[in-house]
Length: 244
Length: 255
Image 1 (tube, rainbow over the protein chains, first blue to last red):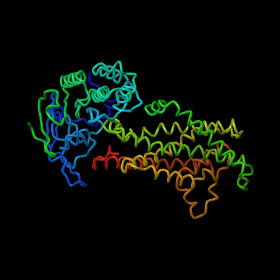
Image 2: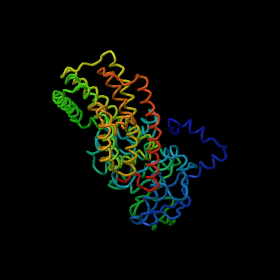
Image 3: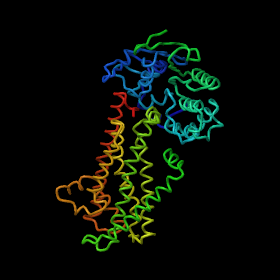
């Protein structure tokens, strides 16, 4: 049974529309149309009319050199950066208009190793993330148990994250991205610090995600870093996205 | 809950805060021995007057300074990004961040007054002390809009520490935290009427130590409520605007 936000009923009422149109839009997956972003102070175009469509239950990879715009693209998709032009939607929900509902369907793993509270335990991190994902108490516990197993974190649950290795922290960060059973998971250089076992767990999590109709969008500097095969592959060159 | 857990993960933090409370109260007790003015018939009267001011100053410092520090820390650690991309979102998430400093302020305020009663024999108006708790909660509500505006400034400009310290000092002066506003020169006395802290502290002093109010209680309460009703939507608007500005400029999670 899909997880529900605590305020889903109110949102459902607002979003009511003819079932046929709704069903059509709900099957669209991730769709970007004409997404542009300019850095005004640098007089540079970060994203140039980017178009992208990734269907449900599939994976896509975006490779590109450092500074080519991969992370900016992910930040636009997750809603941290507002594009100057174009639209982003996930299964018919617009990133700008349906903010809360849209965000509830996205898991995001940023590049690097930031985003953890040094003095909180792994278990507390998961509980906190479940609370800001607005999961009900029962759903939260179910999700926490699932990712503790999926990312081999059960033995680390009571450990503070500043006492974990970098690879273990990366497993925690990845678990947080998958925690609330999102429909789309954005992975920015996710293999960072992961050992072979960690990479395997990540691949399995992506497999589970696509098996239930989810989408994984994976960014890496080069194909050699991808560690997995994808349904679609793109290359980002100076803010332009090209299919490989 | 998250902030509470982080706070208590530093074992010495609460004891050091309580020692700080005791030290400040003790300092003011001995300074008050030097005060002999027509406004305060005995040094103990001034001590009781200043005691309530100390409580509110600490609440201001914790709520404003503490929040600036927390938001900065979250931006640097990258945890703000997690909240901003969650269904809870940056606005409710930031608003929730104001709760812990306010709760801690209330607890330390009670500890401050309790210590002064036990150690320095401050006499409270026990009949009206229970009413001080809801008024303290209302006082906390007056801090929320300012906390949100300060957070909006941190998100937009990344630095607000110096401005917050200056604001706290100005409020301390014009609200009569440590001396009566009647001592202020007429040219700046108006400033004590255009912010909520003057009526809040007058009300708290009235309920806790029996200082006479300048007008009826109900008028003072309405004044405080009016400030909250006007300032809270304004603060939320500014917070939303600063977050949207950060999204457009791609600086939301920069530090």
